[in-house]
Length: 271
Image (cartoon, rainbow, N blue to C red; front, side, top):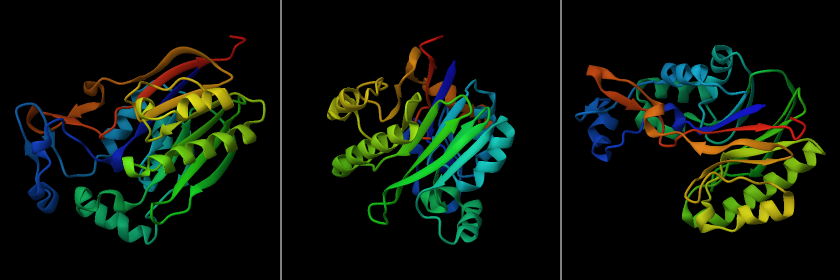
């Protein structure tokens, strides 16, 4: 069995269900906003993300918009090996980290990003491919990881926004082509925040027909775990919102990230 999870972690920030809590004063002054059920907290949430991931049952986790500083401590806490592929805004990293500690929401994505693949087991191979060089639109990188079992995992965060849909489709297609080349005859999971909804694009039909990559999450989903060479035991499914919520101040809830994790279970055809 291979239990897989993909999650855009929103640079380690929270995203409340009530947009009214996302205020300018919170972002500027680092204040906590509250309603009857949730809080929006402008503080470092590394511990909360790490605790949730460590307690979740997965064999491989594909993270996007991941602060680069998370790689080693998160891998250690989760009992995993890490493959980190830096993406965009990573110059002057120590300064960016210091500013993020001062005000995470104000710095936001400017801390720098990475695609981080965590493997509970041994990593046999790590490869990377720049699918868009950046800086405008920003740099996009594919992280390709071969597990000791031979199963290959490709982690991508494609370009975002309706204006860049054609670019995102091209990036996903390029990632699929190279991942299949690197995988050879091995099973492949291609996942991440692909930033293309099946209801708005034919790219997933194209991937199925050309590359035998199947299983988009849902018609309105941006986050997917496509698979070739494995049988699906539990199809890719987004978590309900409450599953990514943690305890906040005054008994309120804090919702981690603006994306829900997507998880699935696969197995080899031989069982």
